[in-house]
Amino acid sequence: MSDPARNGIDAERENIIEVHGLRNVFGEQIIHEGLDLEVRRGEILGVVGGSGTGKSVLMRSIIGLQEPAEGDVSVFGTPIRRANEAQFQAIRKRWGILFQGAALFSTLTVAENVQVPLREFYPRLSDRLLDEIAAYKIVMAGLPADAGPKYPAELSGGMKKRAGISRALALDPELLFLDEPTAGLDPIGASAFDQLILDLRERLGLTVFLITHDLDTLYAICDRVAVLADRKVVAVGTIPELLALDHEWIQEYFRGPRGRAAEEAVEAEEARQDAAMHDGGGNG
Ligand SMILES: Nc1ncnc2c1ncn2[C@@H]1O[C@H](COP(=O)(O)OP(=O)(O)OP(=O)(O)O)[C@@H](O)[C@H]1O
Image (cartoon, rainbow, N blue to C red; front, side, top):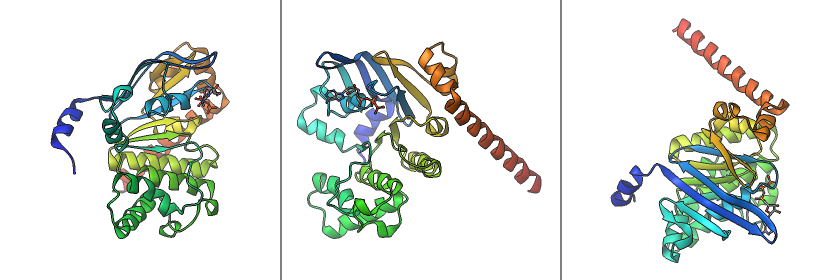
């Protein structure tokens, strides 16, 4: 059930996530220093950066798995570091997470994996209802209904990710964290997965924090992209906005051969859709 009082407050809140002055350090290694980032309601924000720039550590800081040395992180307006246990649990209930590699429990079936968060947050749900909800989430993630009784080892890489998504959707989240969701998928599987994320955002009104190296994904589904470099978010904006910046890594990343190929693929798709629309108009 939605809480009108809570929605009244949240409806005015443009930023679902706010990170200010984040500093993360491991021993001598400074990962983040003065990192700021805001994620707006309803957007798909892509997070990119070279290997080891701290994308996963940033995500872990936001979801409370990494205690930063300094800085503030708020999610849904609640400061994570100052939240008490009950407040933190209330926030956890409102997000879903797909970790790198899906991180399914290998000894549980897909349906049982989906039921893990349900059992934690709603311990009184009957087995029958748990089965029904799991079946619904499995189909919602684009898996065949008969995937439920399968174990992760019996699934392809793409199916594992979809199983991870169905678990992330278990609690009807408003916010989805995805850590490299298309890594290891073939281009067709990756593109289908992009479409799934887009569809879920439309259908469920999700806000999505998406770490990726996949330029096709960035072009296809991200509203804005945040670039991690030099220990902070050096730029955030649409891809055309980023392309206009004079930053070496950004230029190399987006203007390199892969970046250009992704851009051309998007242009070709747009041209195809335009042509289809005109054909449709002519015939109708
Ligand atoms: N628990 C930890 N203890 C020590 N060092 C860590 C820990 N977690 C991450 N690091 C270090 O922090 C840096 C950033 O790691 P992180 O996994 O966030 O990078 P990333 O940008 O997600 O990289 P990739 O794109 O390769 O996944 C790395 O140098 C990593 O070794």
